[in-house]
Length: 319
Image 1 (cartoon, one colour):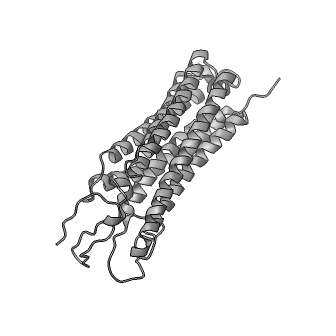
Image 2: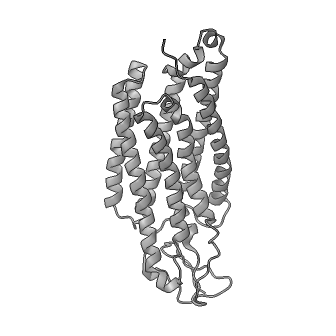
Image 3: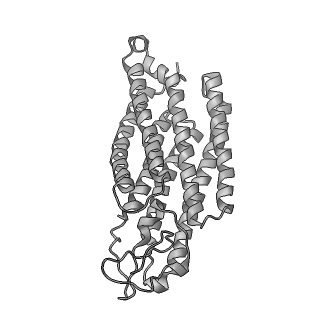
């Protein structure tokens, strides 16, 4: 008789990892709310709304995971059967379908947030966002199709796995393209202003974008590898994956809103005048247009002066 995979132990491990990452998300959510509502800097309404949405999804998913664990590990009707917990976690239930649905919609909103950021960083150029939206439509349609197949047959069939592979491929391509699209645009902006500032003012923001994109991409690759290898652990992968999908936007917004990246916040140019403000704080919390002509303040001062940030569209009075 073929030995059943230890799905009960896999679930406990996944739930433990989920709880750790959820704790980090709680801290990041508090930082994002502080940066959005309790600082003088102007914040686009999409930023706090996305933070609340992602954190709410992660919280609901965490609660359902607890109910799922209690049902599979403590219910007498389940544990009284030999390998009952393993058989329970191997079945498609209402709770597992709900958790998978939360994961899909969390990723959808994350991708839309990143596409919006790509649109703003590229000075409202519609070409790249439209291409990303087309890819996102393919990603979401394949995800919903796979979800519907699982619900219809109450099992993970070979057809659902095939559709799921296409879904992960779309997701991976979108994430990599958006990450490097934003990073490249910021690199070009920093290069254009290097002669005026004496340093790449966008370098910390580029590091943050690549780091956050790398974290999320790594989580996708792990799930992708488990699905392709037909590992039993793929069933539990979304339990941890949804927390990484929440961690990514919260970490991105927290870092760029507070400008606390790589200890370079206080980096100063080699020349004494003119003075330039560090632009990282505006990259995610404000609408950005990149116009090199607006990078220099013709009348800079050292005190009580709100310096114009490179690409910042917020109007400032010059005294």
